[in-house]
Length: 282
Image 1 (tube, one colour):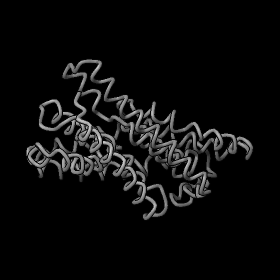
Image 2 (cartoon, rainbow, N blue to C red):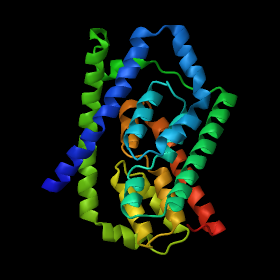
Image 3 (tube, rainbow, N blue to C red):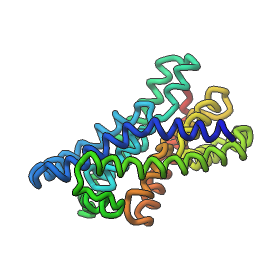
Image 4 (cartoon, rainbow, N blue to C red):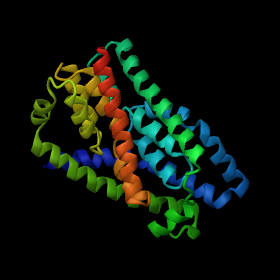
């Protein structure tokens, strides 16, 4: 139990720099920029899925947290958020490198996640723009929900936001680590083994666990030939790390959040099933 708590604390502390930078940016935008600058930032969002997909492949949960907070205040679009979620690799890359997986194999898997993220992100934004359903929310709305007293200064407000989310992430991580410990990785392996169609569906559910542990479990099972690459990719596409938990904390509207998760899950699972159907193996 002590190891579980220690791991949760370490994983949560790693996110503090990402949280602080995010909130400093958001507070700066709210306090220092004029309306014209805000409009420019929003218009540049049409290229967001491209940038978000590239940033997402770096092995850190922090980018999904950063993207989630920016989406909650509509600094970035839904398409950009989904692109980041889909391309996020969490701990996959470090595990691959530690197991000396061939570089072409690593690049191929990262490329799949990158391409799926870009295609999905641009498609979602295109549909939203066509229907004119992009919802607006000001950064100050988030401040009011968090009761951070933003009028006291950028740094103090950013620190308050960071502390609030850090505590939330820590509690969620502790609970999830305990659950995984009680269930056991062997049980999860038994459920996924040799299930061509059901595998991606279940792997997607594992990917929904808002914790970097899900990417570690799926990657290790792939390396041990317990699951196919398609099953692993399904789970890794859905897996957005702690970003999913932060989404429910910072973004108003539980129905909207559930819809976002359902969309993310559907894209990941469908991609895995298509890969299985095409017989793709890496």
